[in-house]
Image (cartoon, rainbow over all chains, first blue to last red; front, top):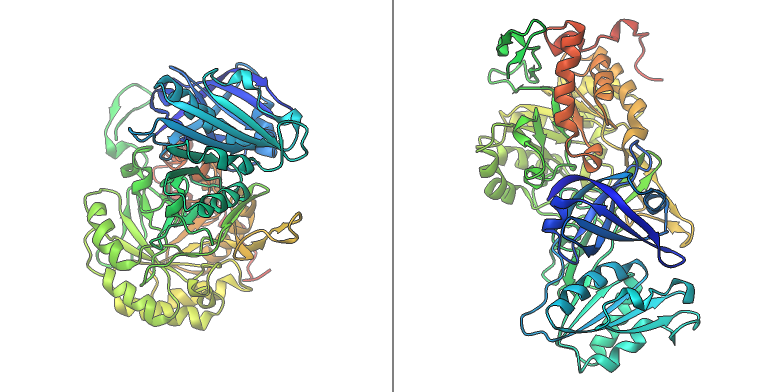
Length: 255
Length: 331
């Protein structure tokens, strides 16, 4: 984990609400893994006060990209920056995704800004010769992540809430077709999506690994404040920032 | 740490401005800090979480996460939300319990040069006492910060912070249970902070820290309900600083034991405000989340502030603003 000042080398809008922000941060890039995140300071003053957790979207040799969704004051401050501007970064933080050595077929399910870490994971998987199916859900066609930005080897399907692109409905409606094929599943998105995925998995008594990257408000980012916690099946409170953000679905209490 | 003087001559430690501060002058063993910059309870975990980011040994002292007799799971999520120049939190004293602190954390602290004080919270006087008793004599524990002011749980002791008699009762009881230096952390959610401060001083506190968080609330207007799982939470960060400075100013005039100031400190200038209001030392809390290197920068910048002003010790600045005191203990 490092404190590093990252210089923005590219800031590009890719859908109506997603920006690709590329930062030169060699120390962080060297250590970064898909599923890990940066804690980004968004203001030099005291308002907005807290850092924002942002997962790695692409990991280069001396750069990292963040996929930033225009969702609030913090993200607005980041996407408003220009090339040459800097951001105060802390990271890489958290555990990241893991790919089991016997896994050949990876099923990735995501929505909204949850796309970022899954794209990072898909790049690693494809480079290892693994097969990836990516199922992503969005509100409408203007928000759909462009397929040309994914590795050509990735099989990609879309669902939209309003039916303006792909399947009309939840992304999790598409999951059951691939449950037999997949060796392991990966998810990143809102809690409602996880609950819907949980229902699908329980419906077929799924025994396969399902790794979920959790999103929570965070303060410290290093497991010191216990502001972002989830409860596991052993009754332990785990910090999303330090013990996660990636958890095995079956290890958590879903209430 | 030595430094070059203006004429380029190497000066040893004895020439540099003295940042050290004694927080338990009434005790034989005392509680001597190398500098007046501590990290506040709940914001620095057990100290180990930040050790790869900053040189924690250079801190004045570390205040541990709030510790209770038995382990606690804490409150429902969401536990925190950002507010203008601050944040609300309702963690609910999630902690591993005093036995595990003694078994797992204290042995690590014992190898450190920086003193660690354990922040102790409880539900009743007996719980506070048993916790304090167990910590007495444990290697690596330099003192106790008595948390009679956590606003987020019934067990947080806030009930003790609101009434001078209750505050005195728990302080006196803990004082009898331990020989450790005893700092009592006060709540700002009271009518007359000076009355509480005088009561805990009388009851045997070695020093007083203030302020804990201000009780606040945020509504989720989409869901039309309170945002936090606990409904209310504690407000911290720069937004609360003027309230904290005022309370430190009032308390420091009234008591004769050292006062430790905290509440929204985010720069060296902020720290100096507290010191000039009468704080012998300060704690950095919420700002750590934004800038973990801030406390060490404050240490350096305090030293150069003293040097520039021709002061030989930080003590010369403590209460520098107090001559303007207008008297009175409440607003």
